[in-house]
Length: 365
Length: 90
Ligand code: SF4
Ligand code: SF4
View (cartoon, protein in one colour):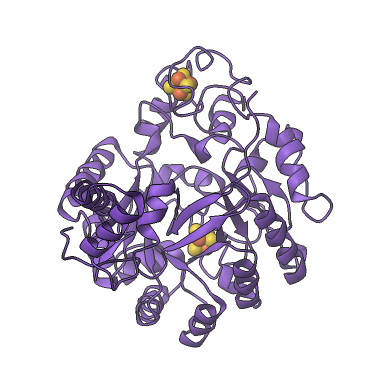
């Protein structure tokens, strides 16, 4: 196997707490309680270790990172560790004063999520009344301070038609980038596939709108696009390959190769409280389990795309094929591809209103 | 970009020396771009006051290369970054 390279980016899930309760939240269904979260000092130690290892970009995420009272101290610590520091937020919990403090602490960039393009949609999806208006106010303060802004629009069957307006909002806010991401089925989204799965016509229309907007807005707005993968022929190169570039830390300090990795129950993940980050990255059996291409089975093993998409997402292989080392069933070459297509078709005709909103107590059954 | 234009790195974009990999990178929203010696030479001269023409003239002298070639290559490099909103024109 090739030499293991140091990670480039870290996703720090500071907390699972969040004022919103999006039904597609990628947090695990069993959310970490507040008293299990790493302390300020523990996070700062994680950041220092990550900086020494070669991490360049730090994404502060959650849950809602603004739910941590020590957010400003964490940003200051992140800058001290040498990172480019990105705050991934719904905006709820940020005030003009807090944003100014984050500016002084050296925050580099803000990524603001958009649940819908009007209050009716956004507040319904986020399960938080007044959330949309508040978010617009926050966007105004972000613009006033001058933080570079990326808007993140998570699309699903219920709001996909709002994509053109989402692009306009990004321009109005002065965002440099927008991420247009079709919902990924992990965590809470798994429970809501029947209400969230786009149909094929919608998925095609979204791709068309994106292609058109990319041409029209070249040099003004950068559009990153995650298409609906259940309708695709090849899987996404998830995380650029397992444990190749990114490292995630969950609120309680568990260190993961991707945010959904804990759905693979056969793997044991270590905790930054007990083990040095460096030792986890280079030596942990869980990180080495799907590194490179040696672990692959057929059809991936002899496929020319194996260094393009790395066999797709391990968590999706687990969820849909029952084997984390299987070819991602989204792939046309997977023996389970037919099952995925059938599922996608069924789910896309599901009940629009059968939504389970995220909550701190896991739903039964 | 033409020689009269003045490129700048907008807020949220900066050069960073990566001590672990021993090289310069350009850090930008969701991007870390590894720079070769030429890329670094160009971007380290981008300060929002010098025009592309001035930058190219300086580079041509430093690298003992024809100024027309340097201007064309630098414009191409900066245009590609501008398209991704990583470089702006003042
Ligand atoms: S997806 Fe929604 S509920 Fe989940 S962390 Fe983000 S804003 Fe909160
Ligand atoms: S067979 Fe494996 S490597 Fe080939 S395209 Fe499908 S998922 Fe990718």
